[in-house]
Image 1: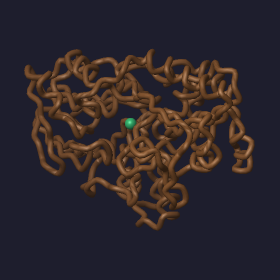
Image 2 (image 1 turned 90 degrees about the horizontal axis):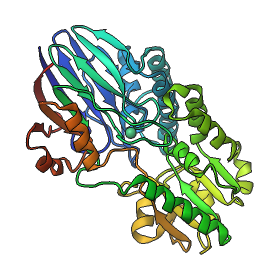
Image 3 (image 1 turned 135 degrees about the vertical axis):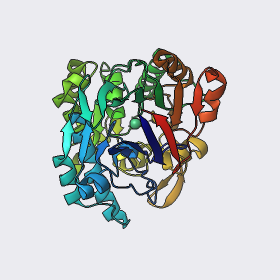
Length: 411
Ligand SMILES: [Zn+2]
């Protein structure tokens, strides 16, 4: 049957995801996120829709969902874990908007209504949505992250964010045969170094810093990266602390062990870390040898209070393990060795190193995944470098959609 799709955001950029998919009798919204920049960026306003689908709970995929599910009272299809983590993030983004005086995009009531409208489904489940069937597959990105397969007369796979190798936290995504493949292309033109090598170099650096008497400060995102880094460090016999929203996310992950690569290991990793439960525990944590804490791009969260303790100590180090967007503190640290601390730009004297841990597939991994799905048509999204895939995909019909433009497809 004939269908139409339109990106409300996130077609030619990383962030602000949102795509409507319309087939006879139904219009659905797949993801609706925001970018937590200052001020925040939002996708194009969503039209009236029948249902919303969420692949996973990173803010750029879920941050604006209450503005649709809360207001329009429509159902939200996602894994129960993504729903619970999403609720944490949505409440947090309302809190931040209030603190920073940004216009509120939705209320706490909208978040409550969204959560009441969640229809939980999980990998392997199929639901009927009008004249199409929708099946959930694991996306291997973070725990609970899903890909959606829409089947009418043909099959269409929407990947969301994916990784195609096993991480310590979550197992990899497997390709699924389909005719249309709507896939992320974050790492067009770039491959990650071999994962084992990155893990070894990271552990060696942590040991080196601690053995010379310094503290390792590791800024992390709360969702996924906090837990992956705890798993990487779990066998070290040092005084290690974890701080920030990642703690609540770890608790949620352990409530849904079926989405984890190895729940037993995450449990014991958590036991090997001291937890900052109140802000007055930060003084003790700052004396620790390893501190894993939000915010991942060093623009907020407890991380800056720890920076103050180590910034002039050449024995200590800040180890960057996540993506640093332009115009963030973390990006300034990498490019200029300086940080904005309470409005003052300060040169940082401690060591700064970057490690390429990623929850996204690299270029070659995406190409290999595409061959495995063997589609006729490929739609690239979530990428500023989509055209870099074209030379490797000459046997396919590749579409690089523009935002806010309507495209047709067979569903
Ligand atoms: Zn993501």
